Amino acid sequence: MEVDTVEINDAIFCSSHIKEVCEECGYDGREENDAFYGFNPINREPLAPPSVTVNKDGLHQCKKHGSAGCNQCFGWKKQITKARTAAKKAGKK
Image 1 (cartoon, rainbow, N blue to C red):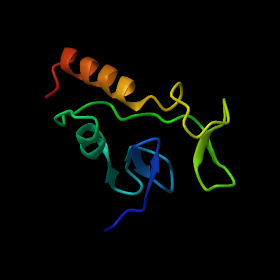
Image 2 (image 1 turned 180 degrees about the vertical axis):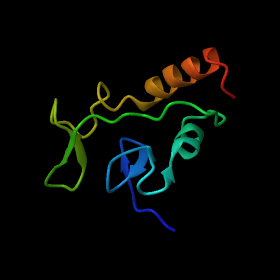
Image 3 (image 1 turned 30 degrees about the vertical axis):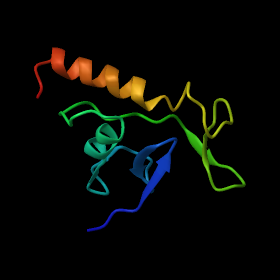
């Protein structure tokens, strides 16, 4: 089954629930997001996007700062790096 996805600041999420791993949709975007940032995929915790809205241009923006390119809220590479480090410490591969 094809899942509709949405790109938020270069990371991919299910469009229905804005989740990187969504059990309801049967979607897991970790491998694609890891590859985009030059990482080999590992079993890590999924990214947790903040609350978002869609602006008049159709772009997702964080509710906290009202910015579509908010690196503070959408700093995915930094978040993926932290999640990968935590996964390695926990012994996941």
